[in-house]
Image (cartoon, rainbow, N blue to C red; front, side, top):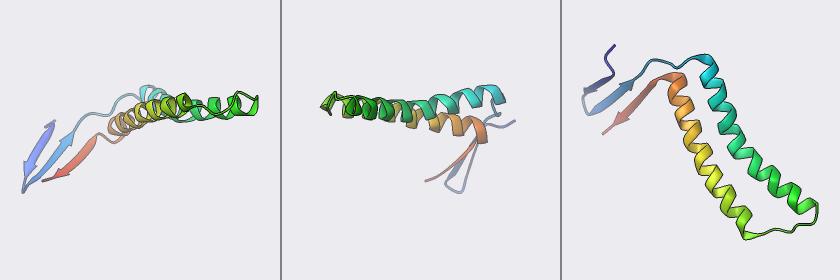
Length: 85
């Protein structure tokens, strides 16, 4: 299988799909990286810990990691990306 094709200023990248179990695990972790920091912040505020700047920093860091993992998960699910130059 040809992994890339460049024609008419369009780059088309293709890879073989990863196994289903691996994709499920990656989607779970991507979801967890978005949800767990938010739930932790909400629980901390509800039990009287207050809202601190560190919560927003961790939400941002885990949000970026979750976004990247979601992107990789979708790449492994569909296995094709088209980039127009």
